[in-house]
Image 1 (cartoon, rainbow, N blue to C red):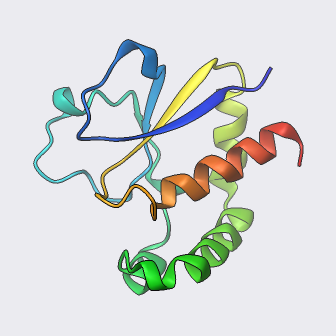
Image 2 (tube, rainbow, N blue to C red):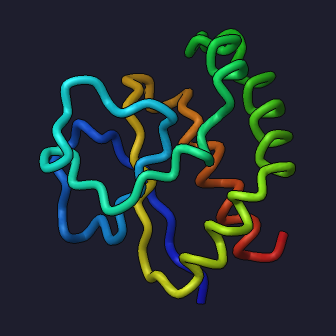
Amino acid sequence: MPPVIKIKRVYEKPQKKDGLRILVDRLWPRGMTKEEAGIDKWSKELAPSTDLRNWYGHDPEYWQEFQKRYQAELRKNKAVEDFMEAHEDQKLITLVYATKDSEHTHALVLQEYLQNLYAGD
């Protein structure tokens, strides 16, 4: 059975029910210590490229196009396959991100992308 994949802001308090907490941002969250973040692993290679992140700038107007471009990056990213193999036996994974806008975060795109791959879609 594939892992359940959730997402959560890094600034929310870590909980045991989060399972394996993986930071999926390219940059470390501002003002957070390692202890406060409660991160088990940092997979910055799964984050959008610096160029894509800078282009997007968390502007909701660009959200649809950002999703397409980020998915295209993920399709070419060897780190996705490595991630899936390394975590296929996990029951629960929480992808952790820092942005304030929880409706327009790359973590949503990554969550859906990984879930579809695990499901064989």
